[in-house]
Length: 314
Image (cartoon, rainbow, N blue to C red):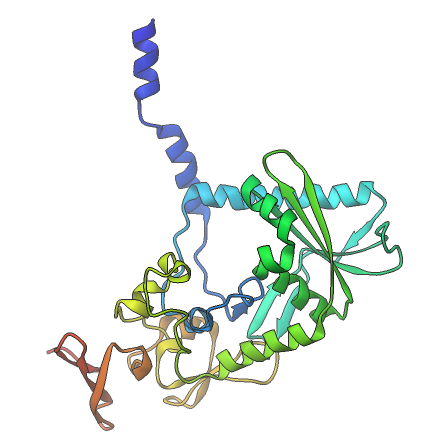
């Protein structure tokens, strides 16, 4: 019996693998139209610029992580129910944020009114869950220092809906302890964040790296690292093309094409066209020539080779 048990235990986890694959199969890949509110607090502006310009394909998220995200959504539903049981009115779940002409975008978790600390004050609500280590750091340091991206989310949510307070609730996944922090709206902070976003949207070249060392902590696990540090060409889309421009005005994150003199739909941006030419700032080389009639640009690449962008292979 012991031998059979050992053999069963040693077998590959085929069922679990199948569960994770099912999550992956159900996940739709998508590109964000703009800068996510959840990422706006990111210290590296270059990373935000690269995300806006779709230099990489959407990340393929492992099934285990997707299941973890689903757990976060379930926890969010529980926290709404917890607040309501405590006599707090919760509303506005998943209302949209659209700022900087729609190039800054996201959704709020909720709004609420009737908190025991301030019954008449409407609050923005942000729900999160955390492992024990990060939870203890949060309790010790507070949201601003321990979780700057979350702090930015709360602040921009308050700004978008004209609220003066945010409620930040975080569940410790180890023992179900709930951390609470009421965050006061900081208009100066928000204006700085939105000015940063507008600067990134208007930028015609990538901002400086946060570090020149690819092994720097902020770069080591960045999904833009290959393009940023290792001379990989970005994916082809309208957003990496020298003809395209992110437009300010309106609320729908418009982009336009100078080559075809037209606005670009979301689907058109993803596919690009045969006239695509990389913005020279995305090419790991020095521009040496261009042919306007042939619509080509020639580069001396960092590895010493010559590359003609736009040339059609014979």
